[in-house]
Amino acid sequence: MRYPLFIIALLPRCGDPQALAILKAAERDPDAQVRDAAVHALTEWPDLSAWDALIGIYRRGATEAVRGLALRGLVRLLGDENSHPDAKLAERYRQLLDDARGDADLRLILGTLGGNASPDPCNSRSRCSPSPASASKPRWP
Image 1 (cartoon, rainbow, N blue to C red):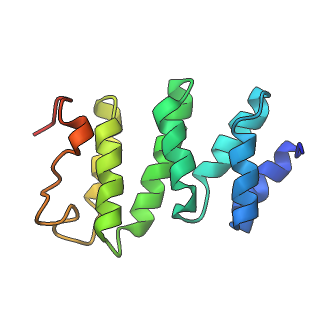
Image 2: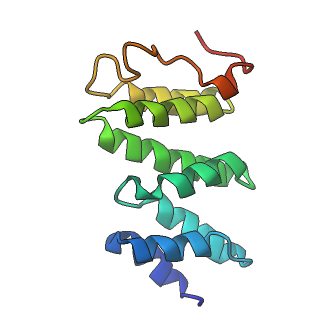
């Protein structure tokens, strides 16, 4: 079912699983305007339930503009979670750092990481070590 663009833009206010499912489907719509509206709406989602959709868009974004939108949405979600850090939050930061494509991405991610309430958001045992899948990528000191 197709929804008008203004309805897609309002779905984050609902914040329920059905609204999220509609946005995920709209993000794959053949119409570029619908896809764009869905990405914008996902970046405004009120909680981490949109994480998987946004990280997918960030990783496979068709354009840098779409990737940038997704990254800003992801960073906003992480910033909202900084007040109660846990291992899952650290893993999400690790995902973003592993997928960062340049200095601008890293600055945005690290700027939000700097607001984390934990003195060691990546868990003192892991020390933000790279995941095994990214061990071959160049690492920032």
